[in-house]
Amino acid sequence: MIDLSRHSGLLIDDIAEMRSAARIQLADCGLERCDEARNIKEAIEKLSASRYDLIICDYNLGQGADGQQLLELVRRRKILPLTTVFLMITGETSYEQVSTAAEYTPDDYLIKPFTSKILQTRLERIIDKKQALRPVYAHLGERGDRQKALAECDLMLAQPSRYALDLLRIKGELLLETQRDDEALALYQEVLDQRATPWASVGLARALSARGDDADARAHLGKALEAYPNYLAAYDSLARLLEKDDRAAAQAVVEQALKVAPSTQRQRQLGALALDNQDFQRAEEAFRRAVEKDRTGFFKSHDDYSGLAKSRVAQGKVKEALIAVKEMSQHFSRSPELAVHQAAAESISTPSRATRKRHRRP
Image (cartoon, rainbow, N blue to C red; front, side, top):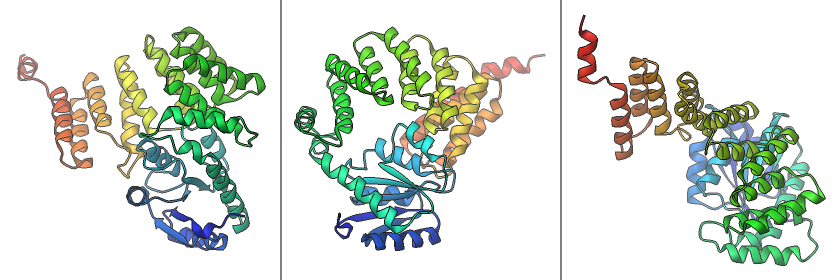
């Protein structure tokens, strides 16, 4: 049994009553050192200031945001150490589909209601895995040594381990990062020879692409999506490949991914592709959804408003385009970056003097 009293935690939930109930259950498990956050803003502040052993996060965080978005945000910003446990709490039985499809997945999740005993068992199981993989994690991250991480993977794989698949997955990523593409290809093929695994299927396609075999990579990803139609990593990899020479097909793939799981980042990607493809109505819809979904502001981007303005101008909606420029200034604090984006968007949205004179002529 793992002594949770030696660990620190962060509980994230927007409802005070739910936080209180969860705190009682965590205390029953032995976790007493536990900070709280009511929303994404507070969670980011606390994660940026302190390091926690455990993150217990509710899926529904209000204001158009959810725990999955938070997880993706902290992973991309690299403020969540690999050694930190991230447990998602949800009342939605459909979360399993979201979790397994997402690019960044929590270490585990629990469907409400659950007992303190179930919570403790789940936390102990995840902590055991994190501790087992700690020698590899020690060499990962921005300042990590990929060669040492690979050597550690090989050392651990030489011994019987219940986490052998996790080690193989990490090793495959490391081989691709270090451009050892032939070794990565062999690893993923070996895994697939033993069992059908979605991450290995996508990894194999990435290795093929890295070797310059884009046609084979596309074909393999197509088969992977037939077998795993909800696996978002396959859509993302296929879209990146298609963007090279068939952006219309790439747009269609992103559309399909959004049907599997809505995502601000993919709405943004869809908007950019639709703009390039001169599908201005679809671009406007995508950028509008990107700016409207999140009311917390953490997932918004200047590019969303710029893209919205461009797509509206292309359709002759100049007034609506200027509204998008105005909304940009309302949602972002003054900064040189904001000024640059505003000027660019305004130059697109505001007709030139010559254009205005032509429109006045009878």
